[in-house]
Image (tube, rainbow, N blue to C red; front, side, top):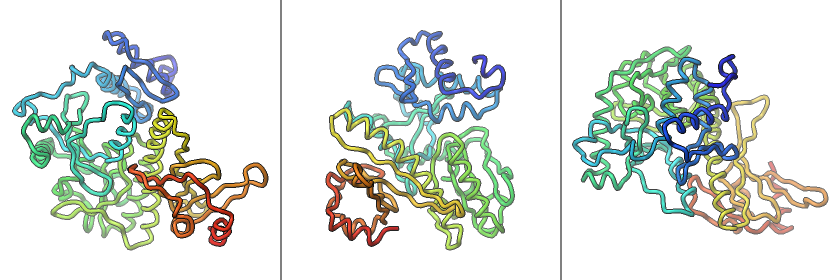
Amino acid sequence: MNWRQWIGLTPTQADLANDLLRSARQSGQTGWVYDAADSSLRDADRVISLVNIQREYAQAGYLARPGLLRKYGAMLAPMEQSTVPRLWTLAQTQIFPMLRSRYERTIIEVQYRNKEPFPPRAAKAFSGQLEVVIGYDHGQTVSQIKVETATDWGISIDELIHRARANLRGLPPPSWESAGDAIWKLDSAAGYTESFLQLPRTFDNLPAKGQALAMIPNRGVLLATGTDEPGGLAALLNAALHSIRNAPWPLSGDLFRVTPTGSELYIPDTPEAEGLATIQKIDMAGIYEGQQTALQAHHDAIKDDVYVATYSLLVKKDAPNHARSYCTWTKGISSLLPTTDLIAFVWDLETTRKTALVTWNNVARIAGHYFKPTTEDPPRIRVDAFPTADELVELTKVVV
């Protein structure tokens, strides 16, 4: 730790990178370098993003940081030191079912398009954007199991998930702690906190009135309330919004209703539905940002002159829980547009710089013939031309 941390200042990303590089050199690993522009550590083909790591490290207490440095340092260790056992009989006791967004995989796949294809992970759809991903616990770190590893074990994905959930049930029972009025937070000493959403019996001891409602806005965070708790849903959404904005490792902006047989996506038929939609859009903004960075680097590398447009949010000052998403379609620029509520058109840049903000549905109706579908996930459409003068007249008739 440097002088900034000794006097109580928040460690910067560069501080963390230097601490990790120093630790790596002491253990004989000299290949790692810090890429400040990309907020990452790199060693040949291995890349470790520092964005969420630094957020977690900076928010941790002073006494907790040495343990986190050891955990992060283990991620830099040579791959052979974190090898998953080749025998199923040795591996089966250390696998666990992690809930992860499928988008983290699709973004990584973009990064590998100019290289050898990224191997698929052993996973199965859970709900919404979430997948059940099988992880092997090494102690300090967890490896995501690849499909080819499961094939070598002779075990199907369903069998892996069944055994992994049995291991999850075998961990010390988690407990519910009050997180404010009418909401509770799950505490698991063994970790895998958000993964307990897969075990409905976890909610049997939830001290809330009515059916359980739950959110997992970040890794390691499971928040819950009850359908009959006065103000409970509003409090849950406020807590999830704060978490997804400020805590490390954003995971999901979805709300789940827990039943005896499992968890299902839930959209309330109440005014709180608008606040939930805003949380989901904030979540998507972060996902699209990661995709944008990866896609722009890919298209620059292949000399494809296209702009990967930003997923942005409009929020009213007098209604902070109401947000609408938008992207920009500019004349003369080929673009990859994310799916948004609105599209902002920009033209006549050399003179008066005209603009028009139009709903996606109206754009699709008037100028949808310019849309070229892509295979990106989350979805994007490509536009290589701009609406004609007559089409712009029609679009300006329906501006927001």
